[in-house]
Length: 212
Image (cartoon, rainbow, N blue to C red; front, side, top):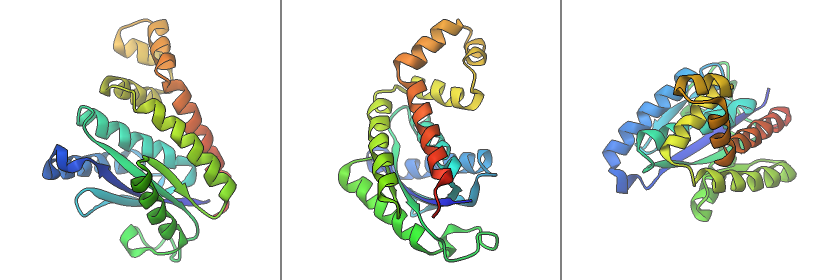
């Protein structure tokens, strides 16, 4: 099964407060490691306070990214987001023997570093690098549309989008919120939540079938 390396760092952490941002990132990374334990080949680890790295099964990587971004936005009330550089490629070591991403090397790590640098340079939040240029071009184009939509979400929309991703059912979300099915579906549709989720799940399926 293919794997992707994630390199990430916080956007505008100094304006938020470097120490507070680092503590929030550590909490969110801990949450992500608990929720996605089965999908993380090497758990996410915080490095240098405002950055993180991990190795994720390719089919789950975008759900992990979505979760981390959503929790950062919700918990910071919209003041913090992250950039994600995702690298496709081989990993030199056996993933069964090493659980710390800092001890791993290989083309996937080079690709993730290149992707994160491209995200910083181009002011993007999601960038994929790998050996298949057609896949990376298509994915990065779709990521641009995803960013365009979710950059317009309030923390409350992010909260509902994340809960919908967890429940995968509009009716159950409506019951939790105490409002009608139609009202919740209308908001998720109008805000682009349904479209973003469909795009990310579709891209995750493509990544899962790709050979590193």
